[in-house]
Length: 177
Image (cartoon, rainbow, N blue to C red):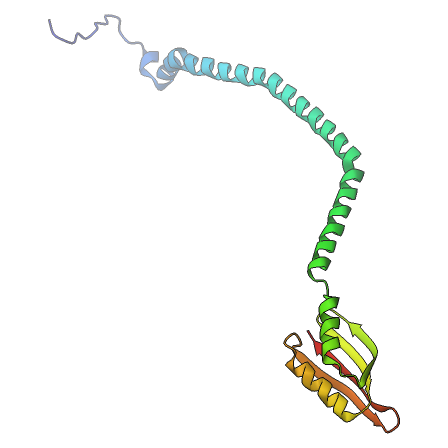
């Protein structure tokens, strides 16, 4: 006996089996039914999973609405909290950028000679505006010399100067700190 035996078919092939339509029909009846069964299983699984997915969507909608209600209730508290945070941030920045009045007044006190009297003083962030009256030109020169030696004063700008024999020398200046 040979290793592979060929099956013996004594029935003759019909014309239908030899045509393209016949072979297609034979395939549809044998292999095609498995394809249809697998397709039906996939459709049934999709149909059944639809129930679970609908329930998940419903649950998520309820959870979102619940959280939305909580957020609406907490909105005034959140708004107040953010306002307080903004005020604290502004206070921190103002504190860090605050003008050190003690240092400015200490420098002025040590730099102003006795013959000069301050009339107005305006302090901004890094700028000091002064209007003063000096009894003599020497007092003004002494003040400018002392200010030039001060390490904290970056620039001194003499803006206006006018002299009067009775009152003395009136001047205004800017000092950058």
